[in-house]
Image (cartoon, rainbow, N blue to C red):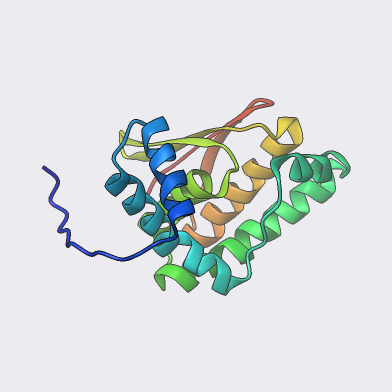
Length: 175
């Protein structure tokens, strides 16, 4: 059993939402309670802050088309500014501090909840390493590489090592 404290709550929801949620829970082979907890967690951990911060949503296809219409120099410039400014501002907005934990918490949220790809985050041998597999093609890898290198360099004053393919970016740094 996990060490998290829980509490009971009851409330009413529209029947149409209940049916959809029950279907999703069955499809995901989980309980309705677990699904509801995940939805509430996503709202409390990200949606609430994203809305207040002014975050926009767009489809992966639209973002990929935008990246593909840009030259590499513009992608690098935008990603670098985004990592050194907007991402740092979001982290400070949500957690009120910049450190290895808040940066890695942001990385988890960015990929788990924002849809930019799938992320594996490990801490081993005194390093933090994350690997991202995405559907944004080569220019998407370039964007993610410079976004996170810029974040780590400016927020943590750390150098990082990056490996990149068309669909994967792996970055490691010392906390």
